[in-house]
Image (cartoon, rainbow, N blue to C red):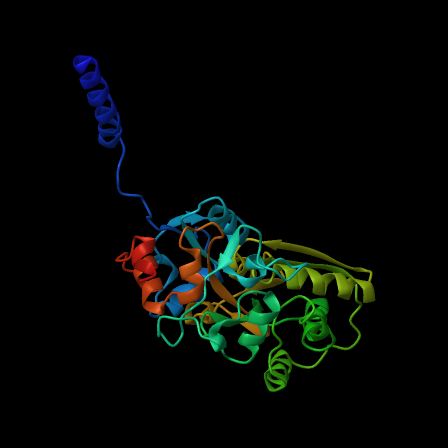
Length: 319
């Protein structure tokens, strides 16, 4: 009986010991960083916020387009990415997209998200914060329409309508109106309407994912007024929109970043039409979500995640 008892004891001790040898005792909470593969305004704007950097300075797994990046984070519990607000929030409900949670920015860096920093739950909340200047700029930014040299013909008529009657659809679509003074400046820059233009033909547009939903709405409403006008609108990133416009491949490029001097030298002419912002996002099942929402992340933490690579673990990010 003593020998039998000894065998049982040894067996019961050895089983957990064997398991312990084959499995790591340290959980992996590595931050899985995502960025954009296409030349885009969201990346340029986010990088500019992170210590005035460029898109190529951003670390992470590169994914094409706003929808692709948000889907990558939705599928990765430890993921972090950034999106235009139009892809972080559901257009119909105004709630955050299922599977995503917008990461609050600890703007005053006191280690807590205070009431005046807590404006992320619904799209209407962050839109108001952007309009009031409570959300930093960048990553809040103006959105532009660009062409080569100048807008003419039916394209100019469409852009003038966007800056006038078309502004009534901005709130409805969850974007932010530019101040009236700035709208007037853009109309002056655009120039007077051209008389005697037959409102028929096709307007081709490509570029920023950020502007695509708004531009689609503007196109639909303009077509209701002028049914002989047709639209060909595609999203492929601000870089594509700029290249297409400067190469004469489209009438309008949608741009969600600043226009750079080299593009101006090549003939880029633009007007600003509305405003939105880029936000950081994580998976809604992130194991540290409660701390993330309560504390937010500091700007330096974002820099250490995307730029320096010094922060690689979620436990460090929320300290």
